[in-house]
Length: 445
Image (cartoon, rainbow, N blue to C red; front, side, top):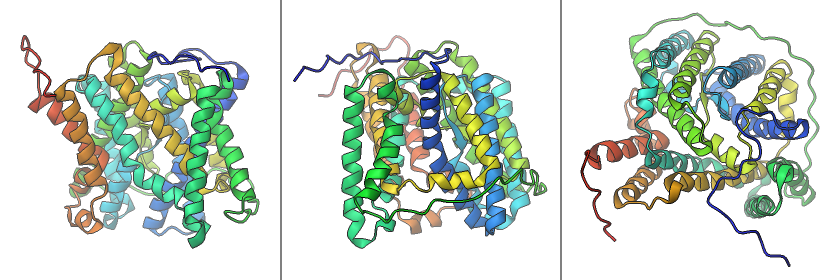
């Protein structure tokens, strides 16, 4: 048995930032971005549709508008915005704001989204975003990536222990998903080139076939559905309720933090130049996309924090592979029946793909923290540890305690990712702030 090649600390990138990969690689990588995005969009759209009490046709139209906003914002980010391999999708923090203010009505929520998104766009255009981006040191960026993996832990658990498998199949689905994760990680470790980049896609397809073939769930029926055409693009008016606006301004502050953290971590990971300009343009595009979403009664977009993990997993930093993905998302908006195809993938397989990505996210976090042979200080270790602990505590907060929070504070205090990030920023820049000329404290170990 041949020995494995020695591993280095350098990040392996097969396709650089500003270059199109070969056609076959482009299609495979675009498909992987798509299968990572669509299940999350379906879940988020379904949650909001149910909260608004939309019937079947209205929920389908809402999903179409959500996909159109996502596709437009993705293309704008790649061509004009941050120009990084960052996946764009509807913001989960805006769902928190929507659910907290839903009693005010669709028009009030839409108006608040437009105001919050407009202020976000202004922060990008004015250059304020880049100045805020300097808060994201390697330690804070490492916290951000680790918090992504932590905050998705409840979601991954629910996917792996799927109710669809029945009471006796719960452990079977989990064991299958865990085995699939190990197989995908081994494949990524052993395979080279395009085959290594295609592991997630192959895992999704072959894993689904194996899951049904083993009888863990009955084989699903093939979905039907024809072309849906364009939905009504501007279904609601705008109302400007000060309380609802205040809630969404808080939400957009969290969204800006998420956007900046993703831009900084992705850019630093692939050593992209001109990060100040990328931060400003990225936040501006997110804001303008949010304005469009508010006018359409949809959720505003954000660049997903999972993006660095996908870059590490696929070994591709090419931003252009996201353009075919954006085109496919727009096509799905015109063909709602096509979305049902993604519903054929069993939850444990989706969970396994997500777990594999999160393992790569942890690697990306360690890569940033230890880049250049840096040795972690006591302060950086305490910052990372405390941010993760705070995020875990908030993520698993009892629902009664979450509901007891004031609706205006719930998007911040009830979000494990946001609270962990706030703790990291406070420790890094306030409690453990390094003064110029001061010597770093000695290790406590």
